[in-house]
Image (tube, rainbow, N blue to C red; front, side, top):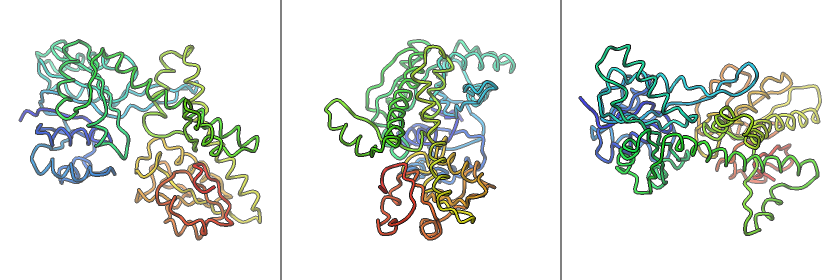
Length: 416
């Protein structure tokens, strides 16, 4: 069977994209290397938490328009939506890890045909779309198939969706379709017009790649400003949330809210791709990353200082409220809250509880550590220090009477 679209990667981007295309009548194959994920989706269920996604996937699977597999099959268009993390080099610099993208590109060699469209959705360093063509060309030569990589069309179409609002933003947000050729950009635009009534701007692939990195670096710099303000205000005895509230009354000022750092796969990662490409020029972007990366360690120091103040020679129980990287989702990727909890768990003088209502098990980084996953009530009953890391609705709803007289480290300004 030949599909209309084959999507590689069934995570937070790939699965919603599959489902939306399928509900618009496209025959879609979703591909993931994890059999558990494939089996879950073929049952009409989901393995991630996202409002209304379960309903959409169930409808798409029951209609016969969506199916999942562990290997690609022939299709008119292929969309790569796999992770693009970074690795830390020996000199402590951050280097893009494109191994997942390369593996996905090479896996297409047995099934692509001339005229197929290959789209990279994964946020990637500038030049990655060109690299996909090179990797696929090499893989095709090794298969011995009489298909040239030059007969395919390549484009980069970055997503702009936010966990918790994915299905809404997939449809409503403007998009960019950047082709290695004008024909590729036009074909990609036409494909996304299947479900996206918003504007889709065509450009070249390198500009599209840089546009997504720029958007996330812009947000990272603005968050760093807020986080740096919080450090300054702490030093000089000013309430940073009151300060920001008043400063934002200026008609041309919109300062963001500080927090324990920056998480998520995009903002915490993508600016490093720019720094890696132009290290001498990306001075502000690098500094913003360093400010945000340092914030978790500042929070850890505050918690340990509070624990020392309690004293008594017995272990102090610390409850970390929230592990996700943003409110009311189960997405823990690059979460500063997980990092803070992990560091605290390494202190033998602390007993660490983690409260995260959106997960049922600790993430890999915390599994096997001294951290105990606890309910909200258990944490409030047992903890000597309450550390607010994520402003989930459940935490905002805790009555002030249950917090009165408690030692609190509030990184979000909701328990002040």
